[in-house]
Amino acid sequence: MNISRFNVDFGNSMYMNLIDGYYFEIPTNVVELSEEKAAGYFTSSIDDPEELLERLLISTTIDGKERFFLVGDIAEKEVLGNNHIKKLHNKVESHIPLVTFLAATAYYQAIKGKENNNEVTIEYFQTMLPIWLLKKLNKFSEMQERMAARFSGDHKVKVLTIGMEREININVKESKCRIESEVARWAIKKNFDLEDNKDAEQFKNYDVVLVDLGGGTDDLVLLPAGLKAPKNRDSFEYYTDVPFLSHLEDLRKNKLIEHFDEVRALEKFIYTNINKSKLERRDGNTGDTYDLTEPIKKSLKEYATIKITQSEGAFPAPKDSVYKYVYIGGVAPVIAESIKEVAEERYGRDIAENNHIVHPEARKVNLFGLEILSRAEEAKRKNTQTV
Image (cartoon, rainbow, N blue to C red; front, side, top):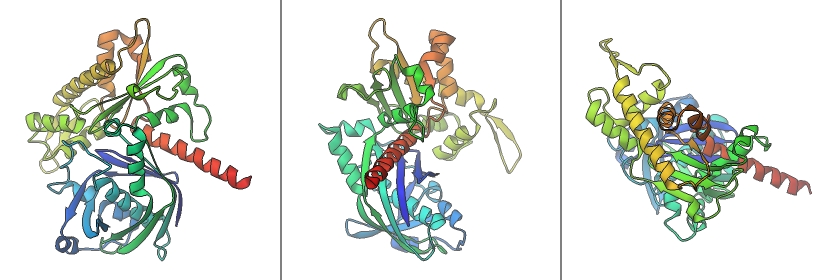
């Protein structure tokens, strides 16, 4: 099986994949099991490869030792499934990105590959690192190279899900790591056909602050007018003090603990219902309905207020200059209404609409930026081969 473009976003909440144009996501939940527990974990088998996404049990060798992992939906209910949400997730050192990548590749091979061929070649793999992690070293490129090296070369993964057992050999020919948030500018500037995007015209004469609101950290990038590349290291900033998942966990514990057993359930409820006029939870056993609109909307507005204040403070605009703030990332759609409300209260409707913009593809815009870059690289390779 040959894969031309494999682009991934290792989010703290969701892990997103775009593989040769095919999109799927997996909750960022990874739980390690003992070999004994892994062997007896399932009591029934599956025969539909699509079901594998919700029953991912794999093993791989790390530092010479075979280790066993539940990944995604099936790990969500485990006690330690969300153990990482209040920690800074060092993707260069953590096993979680590698394990989720292997699980995603195994799933893609199961649904798209030939049953008797467990060899997977990836021509061009891309991922990203958040700004806080890149700033740990003197050069961003040093950390980027470390991350890219984790995926380059050969890998082996065993699928242990009953009915889908197989061992897959993976070879990544070329691996790149980009700057999270900064890479999103390409998805604003260009479309998938590598043509100029008309929507980018509004940024032609304005500096732009890209505000990437993630489940664990927030990244901010100051782009010169025309969505050009950042000028220097000082054009990058980040915040780690108020992560969204931690904010939701506090809301759950303080206000909604009788409704949600764990933070992922609350997060899923909000994402599913945020565009409804009422956020109502229905008890499937009793039929009782609970209106949770007030505490959730109040909490989201508090969070939006914090994020707008932090965003404006990261790069104070010079006098007589106007910055446009473009909010992206997985959290942006959830607090879009709150961002609009807070901005209008502060500046009025016109300024709020023109200068505080939630990107319509906020969740996937980083991933789409990677896709555009990988398509450009693919086109370059084909042109070189033709010449």
